[in-house]
Image 1 (cartoon, rainbow, N blue to C red):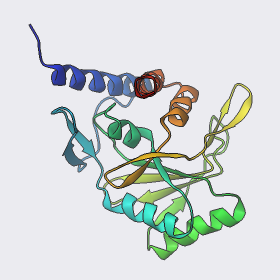
Image 2 (cartoon, one colour; image 1 turned 45 degrees about the vertical axis):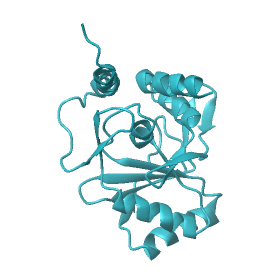
Image 3 (tube, helix red, strand yellow; image 1 turned 135 degrees about the vertical axis):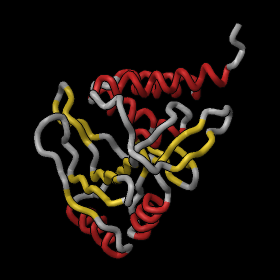
Amino acid sequence: MDDDPAGKVCETVVTLAEQDRRRDGTLAGSPAGPESASRTGHDCPVRIPPLDVVVRVVAALREQGLTPAIGGSGLLVALGLADVAHDWDVTVDSGGTAGAAAVTAALDGAGIRYREDSERGGIYATGRRYVLDGGDHTLDLLLDFAMYGPDGAERLPTRVSGHWRGLPLADPAVWARAYRLLDRPAKADALERWLTASS
């Protein structure tokens, strides 16, 4: 008889991650060097990239009057829905050309290396995407996060829903929708269940 609820939770979150990684063909292997941590509430170890660069990015954007938030796998780990985040996804609503200039000014002022890698076509309708060098990991900074859905481009607004380890967390409802549009139902389902349980 198995009376180890923490073990069951670990198994569930690993299965969730594996479902989407199998779908993406990225099940085998993971980047080396993520920071190990312990998730509150049970003994599953979690692995996240180092916090130093993402903390600097968030601080630099805030100094420019912008409101960033952490989404993607970092949000899932923060909510206890996954064990591993390989990188950080940060969204921010730039407010147009002036806002985009404020974002690059923030990165330049903080001495953070980046390159623009905006994806054109496909499902992504995000205004701009910057890839930041985190040393042993990357950080995606998404300005005016958006994707194409059945009715055209859908804005996925940046809304801060809470904080974890000093990082502002994105709205789980927004990321549930993003994962639906990305055809990653396991992650969307997990966020939707979390929202239902939290309401």
